[in-house]
Length: 120
Image 1: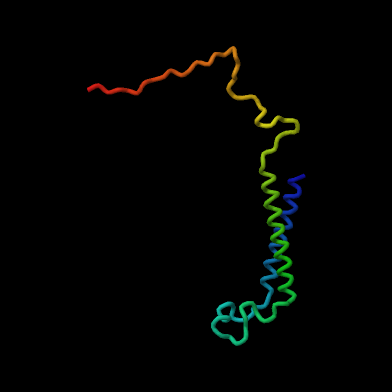
Image 2: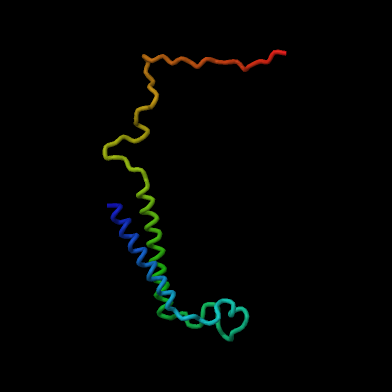
């Protein structure tokens, strides 16, 4: 079920990305850009004189949807890559150890070696 939501969100994300690119490309330029705001060009401002335009509003809404989908896609991708235990499986801490610690098996210490000495 998680994979289904991941792929549906991915398809929606690609559609919104394409729509956002097209929406930005069809907007009319606002003059000389940011450089004209600092060097002249009459009464133009850095963001244009008509900020309440329908295309600007639509771009802001689509960008908000883009951000929400990007965050959701990130959460779904992290959830998909997390290791999953089968139902009824023991937690890793409750599993049997790799080295047996039975009383029947005597544990012998490793032989101690002294550092090598050099003779003159």
